[in-house]
Structure formats: C-alpha cells, structure tokens
Image (cartoon, rainbow over all chains, first blue to last red; front, side, top):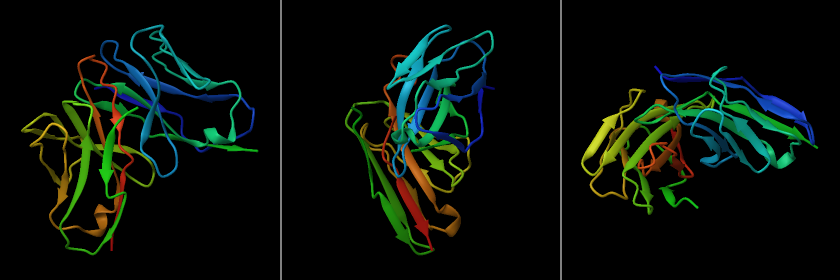
Length: 110
Length: 114
C-alpha cells in the first residue's frame, strides 16, 4: 500500500542555517504529495503541495520537488528562522485519505 | 483561509464519563476525518466520512463513534472515557473534487482522562 517515510528528528539548527527534511514514498501511480506544518498547540497547516511528477511546491521560503525517479519529496529552506520551529509532516494522497509520515520536529535556535 | 472549528480545545474529565468532541466546517466539504495524534506526534486516522449518513472506520481501531447528520458537522463520541483515550484529536475536511485530497485541519482538542 501507499506509505511515506520521513527522517526522524528532532532536528536542531541555528538561525539562518540550511534545512533539509527527507521524505520518500511508496505508491502505485503518481499520487499528490504534501508537506504540512504543525506549530505548538495547533492543528496542521498545509505548507506546500505537488500534484504531479517534477512539480515544485513552494511557500514561505520552503520548497519541495516531486521526483518520481527517486520517489522523494524532500523539504528544503535556504535560511531558517526561529519562527520555523515546528513539526513537519510529509503526506501522500492514498485515495480515501492522506497517509502521513511520523513527523519531524525542528528546533531553530537564535 | 480554512474554516474548520473544534470544541472544546482542552478537556479534562474523569474515567467513565461520556464525551462528545465537536467538529464543524463552513466550507461545504463532503469529506471529513478524525485523527488521533499520540505524544510522539504520529497521526492515526480513526474515522472518516464521505458525506451525510456515511461513516467509515479508519486505519487505527478506536472505541469512539462518529455521526454525520449534516454536511458541516462531524462529532466524535466516547461513551465511557478511559485514561488510554488521553490524546490530541484532530478533525479535517476536504472537498475531494480536485482529486488531490488536500485536507484542512481544525486546531485540535487535547483530551486528558484522569
């Protein structure tokens, strides 16, 4: 069945560092892929999405490219801020629902 | 901006009590979902609905029940709460028409059963 694997955290970075959070998927066909972010005490918010191979999703300085050859959708940001501290979830469309990864906690220190 | 609401935001109750967690959305979405989020952050789908009078169990077995009498409302009920039910519960919805299944989430209810 469809599944998502993302790197385990926590990830701790200094402000302005480069961020990569790895996400790989297993799926039949080419499902839509998503990154969600969860700030402390809140629900999940859609960060970005890609609906077909080679699409690049981007938002708030974050980017991810849907790569079918490596079945990956890695999240990147060139310069993180303290306000980016949150939990990040990779997800794919499994048809009846979204399959989420286990989440990666990011802490950015000043 | 997504308009999906959950009440209460926080609930502390004693064992054996019956509780209902409310979820409402004003976007006219047909599909709605309940997730249980454990302390390790992982999300587990416990219920979903494709529309009025449609409910299905999710991937994780749950002692809770749901109903869908109106499109905008998808409450979750625990008949007899236990400490093992302590968790964060997240409600989500999607219109499903795009085929992408992009989901919008409510703020969550953090439940503590003593």
